[in-house]
Length: 448
Ligand code: FAD
Image: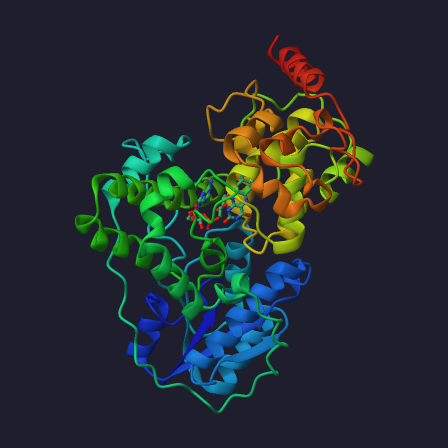
């Protein structure tokens, strides 16, 4: 009997429990639904998705069927065409994914079988002793480690159904190094190269946007072209042969994967935290409506070099370094006093790795409204952050051409350099010390 595998955030054939379950039960029809609900995804995410779909088409020997439409209509129609007796998926935990899957299940007269998830530990499984979900990362990560995960699933040798016709695959985007890491093969190649050496310095290099010190696998993890369990198993496999310092880096990398799992868990338990403050503590705080200064932030023209470099990297590459995501987010929420969802929406539109759980909760972490004890009164100073994490100014000069004539760390304060602003770089749009005070006053007003 034919088995339909509906691919969503799991665009790979290796370590794919749902595909393995389907292949064990019969011949497999691999399907991707171009859901109009995602038509608004920005260009970087769309380009990454197309890259991943092309690759999946190849790794299913050309059997992948792509159809556009609402999944609750497309999937039952394909079940009838293929004579399938089950639909297999990786389990979903986002509010949208769960609602969509419930609609599809109701429209089907065959079972919708969920196996596995895009996470090492399925969201919802890690709980406190009393069954309550965690709200703080460190105890979550301890319990997550204790819970553990299965070994990667074997790659199945599936027999593919070929009697169902799909639409032509979307045009492939122009390839770049970054985009090639979105495909399953490309992600594994990038991972192996990273695991082979650079990961040993991760603990020290991960905070430095001027270095290529992180894995850049967020896009692959978002699309599911690599499963985090594969990464976790590889970390365990190489650890015994690495130095003590390198082992610290491996642990640190594992902890970053745990953040991704933590945020998915938080979103499952608090679906409204996608676009609203998770914590009640700051709900009454006064924010400003986004206006021309918000536009300057979006365009990377605030006059603060690290902030502008980050926003321009985002616009050019569809990716931004984590340290700079924090600095730009802090600038919007604490210097411009704009509520975080405005920034989060802008990020989601422009990030190729845009992910509701990690993005919204990353924003809330910075804004001080989220899971963390990160106090609102911790306001990033964009100049000091630049001097500390981009010590030679290379990151700023890479992304801000109007500042390339300023050598060294002086690039973080071009207003102090003769001719620093001579090539069109803007004046600072605000006084950081004044706005920091203002942010603290607004905080005091709600905590009084
Ligand atoms: P690495 O340092 O190589 O880390 C490996 C993996 O761990 C990442 O690919 C990611 O899956 C996970 N990870 C690392 N740091 C975090 C973190 N702080 N939170 C959750 N997961 C993490 N990440 C997204 O994947 N999508 C988003 O939309 C997103 N939005 C963010 C918004 C803000 C305001 C902030 C502060 C962070 C956001 N992050 C987001 C988290 C983090 O910035 C990125 O995951 C990371 O920069 C991706 O680069 P990398 O793959 O080289 O990371």
